[in-house]
Structures are given as structure tokens and as C-alpha cells.
Length: 166
Image (cartoon, rainbow, N blue to C red; front, top):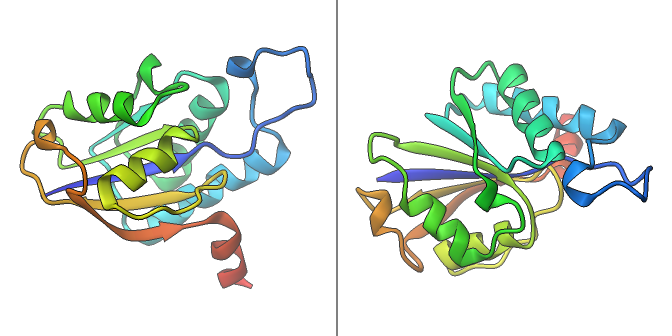
């Protein structure tokens, strides 16, 4: 059994409209949301073996803040294929992982993340910014990843989690 954690990057800034999409940083709300989600991971003792992020600035910042605030020891790797990835591209990224990794966390973007979630579980769920999905996969090897091999076990949306604290 393998586990996939999908984390959509936190809210990004649109302040400078001339800035390339790839270079957009987190906005103030995003810089609060990412640490909050890292702390949520720590509370739930969620420990990925590796974090693989899109190299887009907002995803990199999210991955770093999650790791730091979640007390995670996992290495952060970057994969250019995650930026603007299709469902098939994300499937290929996941299928290429070493089987020594039991739990992998991807940090990236929509619509690819909603697409791979649907592909793996057969269910559609919106993934607003800073949403974390847990998918339990009925596979022993990442290369065996195919349609509907997973089950969504948990979905943490920032707004819901903040409301739960109130």
C-alpha cells in the first residue's frame, strides 16, 4: 500500500500583473495558510517520505513553509513537470518514484491536482488553495498506478480546518 498527499499551493499574489505566472509569490494570506497546514500535518502526525514540488515560486514557498512548520524531515525535491501538469503528466511523475517511498507529497497546482485526484479515486472534489488530500493507493509499486487504484481517505480544506478551530 502506498499513500499520496496532494497539496495545492497556498494563495498567491496578483499584485504585480506584469509578473509571469511562474514567478508569482504567496500573498499575505498564503504566508499564513501554508504554516497553518504544516501545523495541521504535525497535529495529525503526517510524515511524507519525500516532498516533490512544482518549481513555481508559490509552490516552492508553500513546500518550504509546510516542511518548516510541520516539523517534517522529508527532503524537498523540485520537478518541472508538475507546473501546468495534466493528469497524465502527474501520473507519469508518480509512476517514476522509487518504491522505497511509501508516502509521497506533491505540492502543485490546479487543474492538474483535481484531475489526478479524480483519476485515482473516481471521485471529483474541489481543491481550493491550501487544500491537502490523502489518497490511499492499493498498489505496492508506484509504477502500478492506474485509474481508480486509490481511495480518498481525508481532505483538509483550509477554510474548514480554520472553522473547526473556532
